[in-house]
Structure formats: structure tokens, C-alpha cells
Image (cartoon, rainbow, N blue to C red; front, side, top):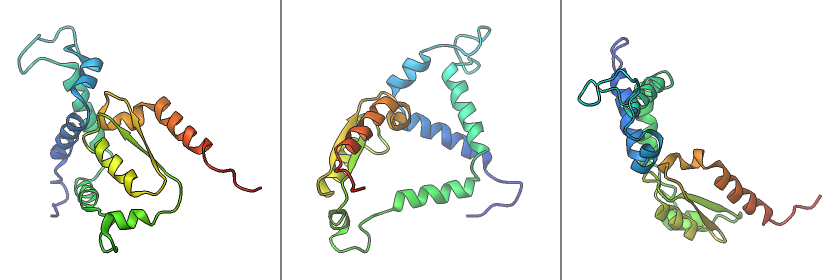
Length: 168
């Protein structure tokens, strides 16, 4: 679980980031952004030496990620995310815990998100009293919550406008 100073698995962290980005974004989104374009005009048009724009982008994201996270910290954060259960140790499990929430809520889901699929957001909202679900249309997969600012902003504004005014 630990590693010696100087032997940190930096390359693995960079590759993990690349795999993650391919996993939670959509083919349609990558195609729209990069298509089959090459990063450099002098690049060979095929083979392992081809400098595809998408490959360059993913490698850049992997290197950038290496400057933001310690590999072991990242493993521990993802373990916590994967094992989090709001219903653990609570009467009625997840449904019981969420059913006790008494504040108004809106749940947003991205229609192309494979990390947190829309059907899970619908299930979540189904356990929250008086909540609603807004599906955000996006080809960006999980990153739609960051990239679809207009839709997200409109959904949040509509939700907030529908709340009763607080007494002054």
C-alpha cells in the first residue's frame, strides 16, 4: 500500500487519468472535439507514431493530473467514493436515510454520464420527498455537469425560483 520515496507510481497515475477520461466521456464527444485530426501536420497519418490530437490531449491530461494528486491519496479517495453508502448503519438503508430529508431538492443527471448514470439520479430523487429530476442533455458524459453550464444554471435557477420566499 505504501511506496518508497522516489518510486511513486506516477506513470500509472497518468495512465489511470487517461483511462478515466475515456471511460466517462462519450465517443460522440471525443469525435466532435477531435475527429481523426492529427496534432502536427508532419505526423505520419497512421501507426504507433501518429500524433493523434486525441492522444496528445489525453497524455497532457495525464501529465497535468500527476501534478495535482499523490498516487496513494488518489487510490484512497477513489476507494472512499466507491464504498460510500448513505444508508450504511441507518434504519431503512438508503431509502430510509433519504426519506428523512425534509428540505426541497432537485437532482440533476447527465443523460450520457456512465459514472453516475441518469437512472441512479432518478432513483435518488425517488427517495427524496418532493424532489424533482432534471436530465441534462450532453455528449460530454460525466463532464456534462461542468460543460453544460447553461442547462445546469437554468435548472438550478428554476429550482431556486420555485422555492418559497423566506421572511425578511
